[in-house]
Each structure stands twice: as C-alpha cells, then as structure tokens.
Length: 301
Image (cartoon, rainbow, N blue to C red; front, side, top):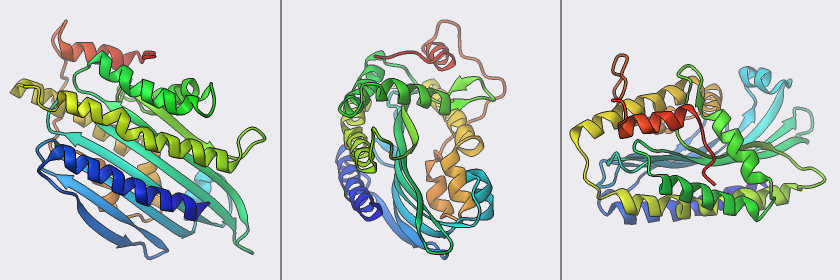
C-alpha cells in the first residue's frame, strides 16, 4: 500500500504543478530533492513571484525510521518504527480576490521494533479554502466538488468531514475559522465497512478532485481589479493563517518533531504578512462580511 500510494502522489504532484504553471503563465516551480538522515526524503516544488501565485508549494515526502519519543507520547505507543508519506500543498495568490488554498493527502504505517510487523495503518487528508473576499458561489463550488468526491464512497462522508474540517481549522485563540472549510479526515483505518483499499480509493478520489475544485475559482477571479487597501486586508488575514499553522497545525508539529526539512515544512507561510494592532474592519464592509462567516461556519451545500 505504501508503494501504491507514493506512486499516486508522485503522479498527482506532476499533474497539479503542470496545471498551476499553465495558469500562472509566468513563474515555474523550483524543485528540490532532499534526504532525511533518519530515513527517507522528499521532492519539494515551490513557485514564487508569479503573475498569479505570489508563493506556493506542492510537496511530496516519504519518511521512515524510529518514531521519536515526543511522537510516541502523542500516539500513546512505545518504541516503534514508522513510515509516512503524503502530498501537501499551499497556494497564496497575489490577487486578494483569489483565495488561498491548502490540501493534503497522506498515509501512515507503524511497526513493532522486534519483527517489523505492521501494527497499524491509516489514511488522512483533506482540502480547504481561505478567501480574503467572500464570493458565495466560489464557496459553494468548492464544497460541491468536495461533496461529489465524498458521495461516490459514502453518503455520510461529506457532512462528517466537512464538520471535522470546521472544527480542525479553528483558530481558538481568535474564536474564528481559518477559512470557509472543505474536508478534513484522519485515522481512516480498515473496518468491516471500509477496507484499507476502500480508503485508498476514497482519498485518491478527493485528491483527483482538487484541480476541479480550485482552478475554476482562480480563473474567474485572478484578473479582477483590487486596491491597496484590499491588499492590506489580505496581508492582515494572512497573519491569521500563519498563526494557525504555527500554533495549532498537527502536520507542522509532526514535521518538526520528526526532523523534517524545515524549508519544506514552512513553505506554507506567505511572503508578505501584517499584524496590525487591534484591527477591526468597517461596519457593513465586505471585510466584515467575511469575518461574520468565519466566526459562524455555515453550511454551503
């Protein structure tokens, strides 16, 4: 399964980066191959200073070896070996009318120290949207494509994983969501209802839906005019994105705790950000409209 899934994310990375370069029309992805001394490595691709994408990364990795003590406590296990692979992407567009997007699809295995016997295995992942200016039809489109992917595998998956996404991407210290959500799932293990192959089919279905969910939004909004004030608002909201990734995100924590490549882990951070003291948008403004939704996540479908 780990070879099968890694082959999938290799191909998906190629598909996604080729399409994003086509949309940008100017910048190309820079590729870095890296090794982890404890075992494994990855292929990082970063785009910067493009016509559409100010910064973004589409990264794959496969790491393995002894599970660090800090993560043993997290998983409530003793000394074990692990394997983890996945694709993680974040795109920060230049135009504040185009939303930031994040997606991740991953697979994890755990083995005992004695005989390298497989003890546990699961999938995780999701995709979510972070707009700076809210276009309801964009939110509906993103959620509908995500729901379509879920519905092909289980009638309850969309509602379940949409709820988990709203709960996970919650900046609790701000009492607001990071964005308008999407899907988030983790610890997808084999059951009587879903085999590990069924989970593979589900996760890859969601992965294959990403471009359909995001690209039409980019193409619709990337050439809209925007003001200096709207750009400032984008940078203030990007600050909240940074706060979530550094304070709450489990993927960032896992990468740091397992001696992952720092440049790849922190590629999710935008290049231009502001933290304005006690900032509040004008009453009745488009900026306030967004905040009202972020403070009270809604059903888009």
